[in-house]
Length: 209
Image: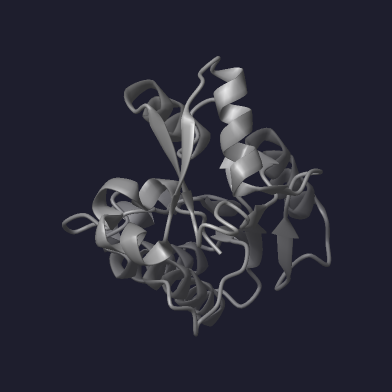
């Protein structure tokens, strides 16, 4: 469905007992802005689900959402949750950490970057570059969690945070990708201030906090 179009969304959820919204974007491009996708899109889906008689709505959000964050991405995720609850108060929200799987948008892009570049950027001050902590979660585990809450009474209106079994630094994540991809690359500290200047090229590699 085109989540920017009322009719398209209404047709997609028509007759559904449960609706799951997993739409999101790491980068804004053209009409696919954070507002259009994470806020207005979420509200449109929730409203259509309610109007269509769906009994349950599960919204996939991001861990650590914060309406006061300096990140436009994180702020939009927080506003999206508000939109969901306003339109569908009994929705269940799943706040996922970095999700990995066969076609994920993080590990695959890190591996692709490693194939193209002789260096890998680690974000932060030189003394602690790559120290941001992540708790990657497997996509099949997220799907199982969604299935579980849909089958469980009492999960309506609640928020769950989903992380995998291992906490690792961004440096450890990059090193894991390089090891699995059988690549040897130089790890180079890149201050966040510099990273923001070249965000168009590096945005998909920035750890979301």
